[in-house]
Image (cartoon, rainbow, N blue to C red):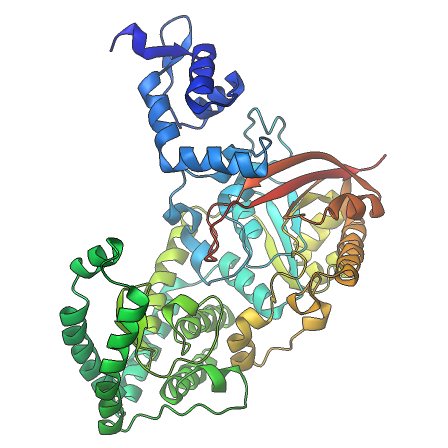
Length: 528
């Protein structure tokens, strides 16, 4: 390597400005070094980087996306908080993937604000080991889990009983050999239950026919290559082949006497699961009810719920947003072949039980001896100490004496998600009471002026109620996509003040819309 290939930070700033035809400041270059986007080289006097290394970053997918998104969303976009360098396996590490949940934030974002590091953006440590943090919109419990990892005590509150169950299952301690023993018992019982039906035989026959058909009409990778070259229109071609295969599908349905009738009315389970799947779900749940240990019963119930979600009668591309029940084989754009709906839960039950045991065991190796509780309640009026006392008197006493250091939470967005309906299958199976009417900013209320005002009132009431349990020098971090600019009004109404905003790009979205999107983390304190 010769010296002409190395640039100081200021030289790199000048070069990048010319290369990109837009201003790139020295601080932008320092950020790339700090977060490992380009390699730092110290020659004994100055910090330098290799010009080719810098060029490669700007030419890369993430580099191009950063430039594009900043042009659309503003130069104040904090790309360090995109966590674009973090692998998907890390954003879903250990118990964070015990159950799907729409609208959760990645653990790295929570860790960034809760841990004890500082950088050019986060200039002070707010939370320390032994502190207590509160999440009044707990969702699936990401804040609770990350708090435990960092040695911080935590309280989560959610109006949804099922959300609270997800959180509880993530943080509670298990006798894993006992859990595994119950899994084996139920799995063996399920296999025996299925053995006396014709489902397994039917599934085997259907898969054999699909493999033959797909090998002929959708050979891999040749078919995908032809689609890429636009020699084949996948929508037209796929639909044609879908119709060709259907007679074979109906022949097998008739041969094995498989019931594919769905009632027009009924609960969620009736409308979205094949009769054979429903029978297996109820069978497994009856077996779970026989378990004496409450924590084991809860984690297996959660695994069954995760299994149910994957076994709904829908296409692979419509799992996040259901449209119509899929009762036949179909062309699947996601897998570029003819796919089928599910007629049995065994495969996914077996997969998710093994995966869950592995994740729980992994979390056990890093969990700290701190206290976390998950409460069901309305954060606008819940008495936090009284409710914690019912579950953990020692923790309740600690909250009374020590006070809560602050909040880290992501409140619901206005008219975006129906938090109860996304898990309707679980509410139906477990018989949980639904509190849809108590949600703040629910989807069914829309995004009109009255919905916005109701949202402002609701979030303000939560902050006012929770402030009673906070220390005088509290810090609140709220993650929000505040496209209607409601949070200044909310914070002012709550008697607080915004002291800083962190604007971050949201890269890992599950929706099909992968366009430029950002959210703001508001740092809020008492208005003295």
